[in-house]
Image: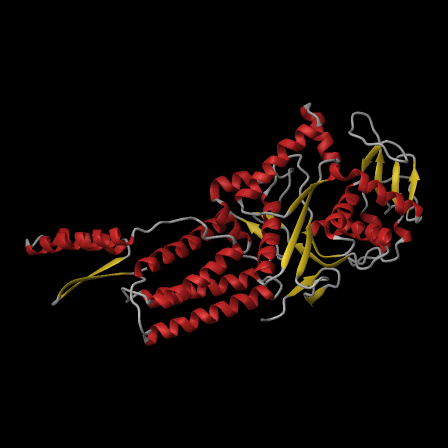
Length: 471
């Protein structure tokens, strides 16, 4: 087996994947802030990491995947006040909608953790940072001093003076413009918790540092999220985590997904083009969405267009139809024919190409190419065949089961009553033969035409009427 290689945002290059503990992978992915319905951009990112999760398990690793839920945040507070509900009521409603979306998409992290359930652990880390002089207290909260952390900027590859230009939290009391809040002191009508420095609530960045380290250890293997989180969120996570523990690297591999656009434009409320996952699921279903998301490499941008989703639906249906047809054709046993031996070799090559693609930074588009190329080869093979050897069928079925388990598609049960289908075709053939004997050729030709549209080719020979499946 090849070694798995992945692109590490921290180093800016592909690296051979070697987890900190042999045979184990500990992975953390930044989750949603449930103040509204989750959108297709979230679905793209979480599908990407779900496929990564599945592939690592396929390769024999024991994977522990943790995802956070940010349930205290400025946006949550603002939305709750607008709706006249508590933040708990708002978070409960939209987090349940999010869990429903993930369940339907067949995405299942091992642990979901809520920020407000880990306040005490956050206070312990903040206290440690204050004691180490990485953090300081001013009138509106506790802040991390980025100048004290010499590696600040190593993830986003920007100089400190450039990073602080992008800060949108002007505060004349901060030591540096780039310093970020660890603890925000209480404001009217906001949820708050007691702390050694005064009642308040945690900053955004501290929650991920604390929860990931609690469930995965002070150093772990993979931290992921969307590219928009590289700075400031992930940059700040590294600073506070490594400053608190004194251990480097806090995370060995950083993985980030590309942006999802809607018809070439950035998804935003101002453009009114945000598509909730729940609406996309109603229209396209989970498998079409999953297959569409993996049609692009996880690090590449992807353009969400209806015509692209329709093409994906048609591609998925072609695979389903082929597998249905193969179930009907699996009849013959014994020695493989020359053509079957050749197809078996192509199946073997497709499996090899699939593994190589997935081991190369989870290259799903290239893995998909091996699937669709094999579909073409199988269709070419069965064009003039009425049966397929059972041993060859099992080889093909094994390939598509691997594809299904990794990509999370082809899960729908589509029962094929083989004997009933064959008997019905035979019955139609008998009726057509009788029509021909009665010289009702127009009607018999119409039956042959309809059968061909259904994938059944009828041939009139000197030995009698013959038929075969054609995809």
